[in-house]
Image (cartoon, rainbow, N blue to C red; front, top):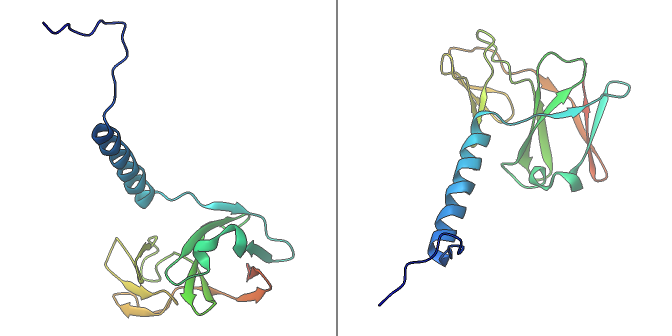
Length: 149
């Protein structure tokens, strides 16, 4: 005769249950990150922001990006890796009617009216007619320096 586990005895988690829960939690965290990525607060010094690329390895390879919240600027700045060590720092404000664009893989897409931009800020498809505002960037050793007006 098999005895029922007592209420005080801890339940064993199977490997399958552990993996299923872990995958579910990871997926939930990932999906939550898509909608509201927290911006990294930065304080420009003499109009410049320095980002140490060793602290943000996603910016080293193509496709990586970082959302900054520069003090004194009313909107965030997207820093995007373009590959081959090149970067773009862009205002995420759509030039059509001022909505905030989303990063969608290799492009930036306006959720309001469908404008699409390259990662360099150039318009791919309207209704926007002007490129996103681009901030000057340069490399200084392991740092990316961005000029913030």
